[in-house]
Length: 146
Image (cartoon, rainbow, N blue to C red; front, side, top):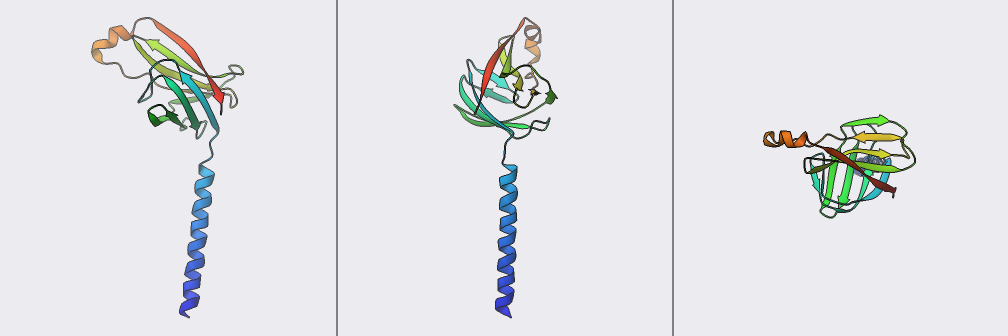
């Protein structure tokens, strides 16, 4: 009787482990993976990124999508502020905005998905508000599919 009970517990445990393992591998799939090179230091959401080569993966192309970046200083998670479906051509790209001496990622367009992910500008200290209202320029950084 005791061996039957032990066998049932062992089978149930094995089944539970199999279910958990398959669920985590299914959720680990990404909708997009890519790479890019930043020509200068930028802010992206709450992260400060130095110039250099980066790889990234996108978990979901929705507003709740998370970008996992891997670069010269390790990794970071970036949360999306807004997602929009659009067609801006065949090239995936980051749009970097330069304003008042600060460079930050404004959006990421992924051509394969036809989606643009938008990010908030970093908060400006009160003493620099006038400076932040100055001239604005943008640059495009191409993204290669990984």
